Length: 167
Image (cartoon, rainbow, N blue to C red; front, side, top):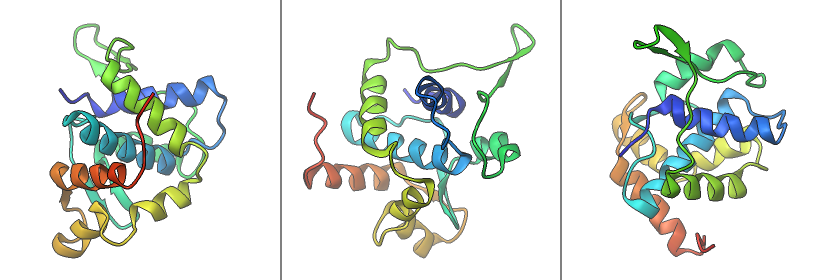
């Protein structure tokens, strides 16, 4: 089961707030979200988010998240992403539940691997030759959906080259 993009993003934002990270910009969040999505696909066969990443000029982007965060520009994210809840008729911010152990494991390990890397460096990593973004951007052009099976194969190959998810 994939989670709403905003819930996954808020899970990353929450971790950033807990650690008082001043570098959680929209670009960094997009890249962390992509890596989390990739590792979730590689380790569970399930996507982390419920929308496609698109091949934009600056790398993979979840468009709904981009729209919700563009007001921060290149600055730090200072609040959670909110969605309208039709039941309460209010805007609310939700995270993925701590009981979702596969997700939490992928989140923890993605955080450990990538949080210390700058947004620009993370972006460069998504642009590497033969990355899912590169293949999609070259073959289908800007704004094409990056297929989850392509993302999954890429991250499985990374795991096979030595990235370990062992506890």
